[in-house]
Image (cartoon, rainbow, N blue to C red):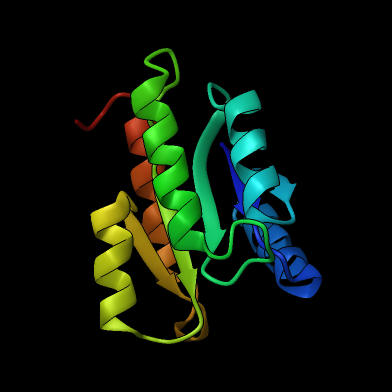
Amino acid sequence: MIVLIICADDSSRRANSRLLRALGHSYIEAKNGDSGITTYLEYANNIGMVLVDLVLDSPIPDGLDVIRGIRSTVEDERRIVRVPICLRLYEDDTATITKALDYGADSVWIWNTGAEALVEALAMADQLNSGKLG
């Protein structure tokens, strides 16, 4: 499965890439929210999941805005397949998690708690992409 990684920090993006590769997934990288949404639109029918960092560089300031932007674009462009979105956080923040889910995230991965939540999100995306769920 191809995962779109949207992450402004180079070292975090490399760490995400290495982890996804170790888990057997391919990836496409975007360095900020705007390029993430543009990349999503360009490759939407090939992307199996979006992994977006909460903290991003301008012009789109954070991952919540990216989630909302991708979801509104999918609603406007019926030809684009809706793919799961996983928001990556650095700490457990209930208010941010609630907003992310309200904006259309399918899962949340808290970076410092290990990769289990990411592995679960990838498994769910694999199932959705193969038509086994929903």
